[in-house]
Amino acid sequence: MINNFAHRLADIEPFRVVEVLTRAKQLAAEGRDIVHMEAGEPDFRTAEPIIRAATASLARGETYYTPAAGIPELREAISKYYRSDYGLDISPQRIMITPGASGALLILAGLLVNPGEGMLMTDPGYPCNRHFLSLVGGEGQLVPVGPEDRFQLSAEKAEQHWQANTRGIMVASPANPSGEILTAPELRGLYDLCAQKQGYLVVDEIYHGLNYGVDAPSILSITDKAFVINSFSKYFGMTGWRLGWLVAPEEAVPHLEKLAQNFFISMSTMGQYAALAAFEPETRVELNRRRDEFAARRDYLLPALRELGFDIPHCPAGALYLYAGIERFKTNSQNFCLDLLENHGIAITPGEDFGRYKADQHVRFAYTTGMARLEEAVTRLRRLYG
Image (cartoon, rainbow, N blue to C red; front, side, top):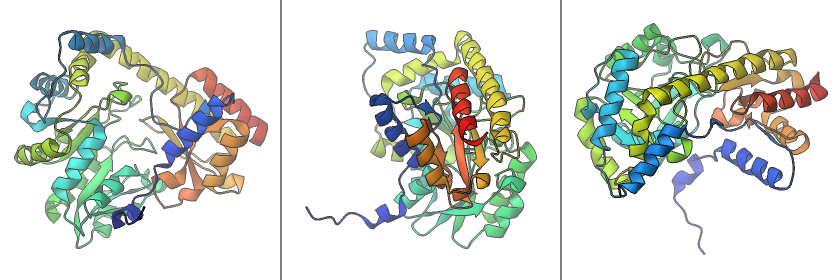
């Protein structure tokens, strides 16, 4: 067979956390005891009211295509969620249901970026962002950020890195891998810069709801001209259902819907009807209980890792991760993670998954497993480095 695949493949790197997860599962299948701290997937199963709603949907025969923008009931439910939790009046017509946040990223790349153009984004940051841009001939314009920046992009730094072919800015709050949150003034500054440059602002808010004692403001409280990505995967605990949403300026929705019609046709019908139950009071009580447990895990793991010599300058205010410097251990990130997995049964993610800036000096711990397993991981680490 002739291997003459598209040139764009050279610009799209593997998603290393998936490779780590695959290898970790192989070792577990061989009988090894693996502590999983690699994937950003909450370990709790989907809440029972959501599962019951899915079962009822199937019993009613709701197995057909839906509108490409999603069922009206779910778009309305998300609108009510913004009203109850944020005090915002977001029209359901501005809300599109997508196949995970990934689906939203894909159609946004198709909407906003021409071949040869790019979007500013943090380095480190979620790796797939730049790869979606590569798919449409664009580029992720990586801006190095470190602890002194709280691993976030400021308006000042964004302006310094703005290029002639820059179309806008993509940020996440809370962020992956750092867990850092952008304040309302910081979001305002980024939006004002985009408005001044006639560019677009995209804010990934998929870890909203998983913020711990600190508010995570939405860019939608500042402007109705930004694009917001969210998901049912993290706070709502529906990773395998592959369901997300996108809030867009009203004038962009018909174009996004056209892209969705061609790329997806529609989302999982059963998943959409199940997601209606995600907003019920019974479900929210359970989801908030789980959020509190994530906070307790963070509060255990953070000081334990610091004590062992991992460099974590700030206590992350959200998400599910600790992004840790490993300079003390005199090795690079890939070798460090490989040794921990193969020889000590601890699966974590190398910093190279999230960009280039000092990536080989960092790793990401996901506190997405139970406290007993976190304690076991710390015990193993103490035998090595204590």
